Length: 348
Image (cartoon, rainbow, N blue to C red):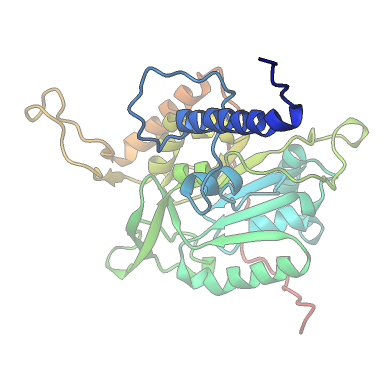
């Protein structure tokens, strides 16, 4: 019986048909092996196909965090000036406009040393913390005034503390001095007027708004070398004049590590007033006077004990070797306590 000759045109469709299903079968197996939603009962099957992560679903939290990091108030700020207890904001004017205040020589020297004598105001950001509502209009005007010049000034109407909440502060009858004594101490007895103000934990604010900030792509000032003063590196300088709240804020900054990690230079003053701070939480375990009886956040100091506490606190701070903050400099400049230089608005 003669052999039947098979034409390639006859078997080609069959070959292609079989090849197609073999390819499809492998694709199905591969997809099942890498699909996290698969309900395949085979747990022993291992695929050798390369793993390609599934695309993130739109509008998921993971996707948002991966592509849109949280913006910070300090983004695009090369240098930062934290003015704690800003009062009428005069120190910000001494920083931005030293030529208008020729007698504030100590402040000029300090700012030249920290930010450089040829700094540019476009490289600076000021964050002014002032809880006294009497100065609110002044700070709103400063924000507008500096803004028209292209300079960044952020007014924050809070008292800095070691916790969030509200605090009772007092107007102490020193309006003729721009209420420089406004704070949590009743300095004139029954004549003091209470004011409830919001408080924020400064440590958390720095972590959230300053740490890891996006630096600007361009720097405008002339730093280092022949220009002298200031090496041009991004700096965070802090002024602290917060009417004895330093005994709450400074230990929190120190022991949290935020001061040494984020602040290059800190200056200000301590107040020799009795301290009577109650704890934020309850008592620990233990009998009264025994182990665990002390309460976190509790601090009671008589007038004669305050300065000794301050010295020991700074001594402990100075003993830390690995610290970005060089020192706590005792300094306050009240040469222009009332300012005296008018704000001139270009749009009026």
